[in-house]
Amino acid sequence: MKPEIAAPSWRKPAGMLGLLAYIALYAILVSAFAESLAALPKALELLAYLVAGIIWIAPLRPLFLWMNTGHWRMPTDNDSRMPTDNDSRMPKDDR
Image (spheres, rainbow, N blue to C red):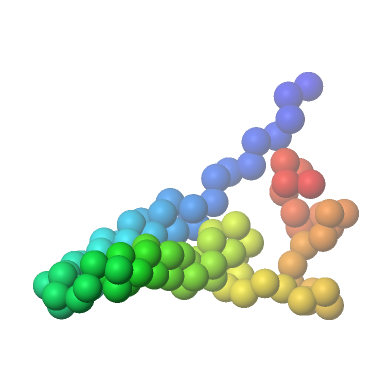
């Protein structure tokens, strides 16, 4: 007997489009400061680009949580909205 395949969630493609839009906007924002950053000493310019290259990730955590769970923040232990491993609301392939 073949296992049931759950219908794909619309959140993942929507989240990927949101992710691409966010990255494009972030790149435009950082590139707007390129001339100002070029005027800095090379060590500070490198540091600025390193920081800019890392901090873009932090705001994406809620997006990734939403894409996987349907909620914008991590549920607490007593959050009844999140299905558990033995919950019948959870699709069979996610158990």
